[in-house]
Picture 1 (spheres, rainbow, N blue to C red):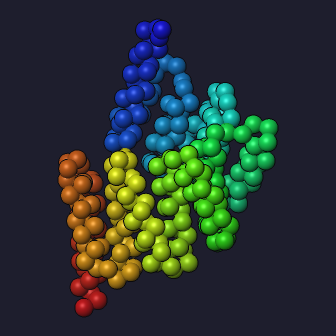
Picture 2: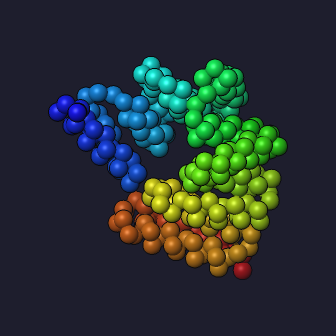
Picture 3: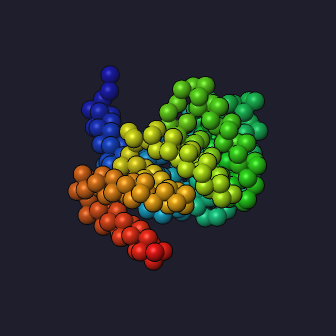
Length: 254
């Protein structure tokens, strides 16, 4: 049975997690700070908030804390995942690859769960893509997809499809990139608002790249409608601005 302090912490953590999903990062951070006992989930969410705010050094600091309090292979791997994501954002893909190779070399001794392994394969794919190694990027993305299907993980499958679409886009295979992204977008309908908005933005861009102008416009209109539903001024302005830029591009091409 939870003690009173633990119950309060659990409530703060639940509230913070929900606010992260809604994109309300300041409120989420305030909730996590109030928790007396630090958990891996709390630290992970605070790292996600820091990444969303582009506060990379702070996010890496949370990785250090996760490593100190981690008690199993999954929690250690989570710290590795977030750290490598931060390094990618700093354009330090080679450093991230070194860390990932070291982490995967320990699998024979202490292997994380299949889901976490799939996430590691995904970040490996992103690292190889960042340094232009498209063949290796595709190899790891396919491995990630295989695990996702094997364990019936919607979130992992979505990430694998996103990675594969990004690889196709990098080699200017816009048609396959669009096909893969459509599948990705279908899988993230229940995800956070920010993920859905970002997905629709990419979907519109890919439709435009494939000269599917009507489809691109429909997607941007859908994105604006979604932003209006949550009544967030910043999201509405961003979505409206993207639509205006789209119309200007089409006018200039006439």
